[in-house]
Image 1 (tube, rainbow, N blue to C red):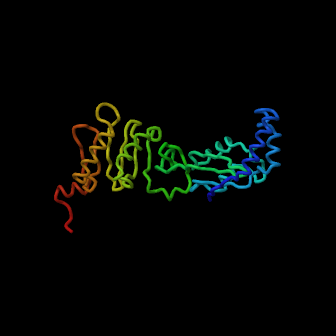
Image 2: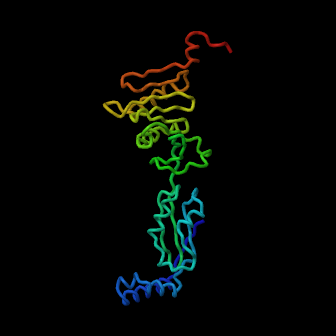
Image 3: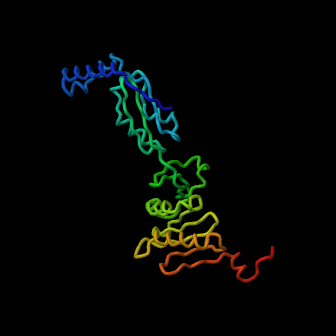
Length: 258
């Protein structure tokens, strides 16, 4: 739940008076002293309300546990930096901003990680974001429609895959898995089982160029609707297709009549 909090002018006046008193009491040391915190508490500057924005997947209980504060404590005694750091250790939280709104409110703004893929490593499956950061390894049934990332160096080289998929929104939901081969290049497996082999990002023909060529050919010739198993785009001057068993049967005239 979020709230818009508007501090009253009279409160600002009281706070301004306290600041002047603190500076008169001991300069910057007066501002940082327990004396100033005590005076602010006596003036009513105590925590009474917490509002949280942006925490969609992060549980409220986890947010409150990370904040680790109680109502009634002096609001100036709260360490905002420590709160931010604790919040950003929560699995779904990417960034957090915590601010005071006088006289007694805390406003927490959370930006959460966005699920990008499932990563399989050492026999375990993890939900990761586009930076390769593990979000969670539990409750993954909701995310089975995301691509499965496998292979040595897959998360290290994830930026190159993110770039490819961002270039081709028309294939959203059609990529079943992305396999990092030898830590050098990607194979993309579509939901219909067809495997697209992309080249290494070396030399004059890059994975992004091959991906662009494939997208053009797919638009023209509907390759993904054909009876093929593999589309090999690793060579810049040719495309190699491996026909599926059903396709071979058709070519040999052995397809059953329907």
